[in-house]
Length: 131
Image 1 (spheres, rainbow, N blue to C red):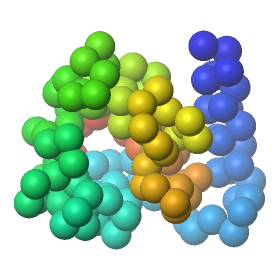
Image 2: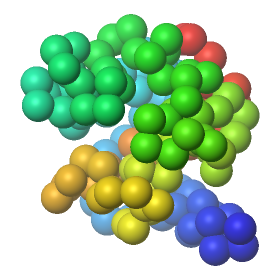
Image 3: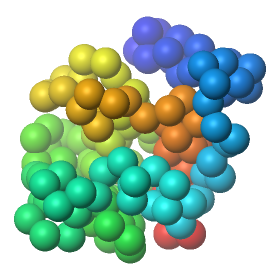
């Protein structure tokens, strides 16, 4: 748990400091995350698009009903997104951990930017509203 908390703090510092040539912060609202993160990085037809999404997890807009409060198919003890609990959210583990509990970090071969990861973490921590 300490390692996860430390990782979150370090990630937040990178976002605040603007390290890594990252883009402007992404608002921590689902609509912005769908537009600026999920659509360009996750919703390809062979990944998490509307047609035959991996693990049944479509990230096409509107994604809220497919991810918030829905059990992960790979780790049934975790919700895909647990409102208010990034560490209890399967999505958070898959995007923020270089070695997630199952499979590989998402998206494969091209991790999300620190600002994208932070926007998703902040959205989940704030209750994962359908906004």
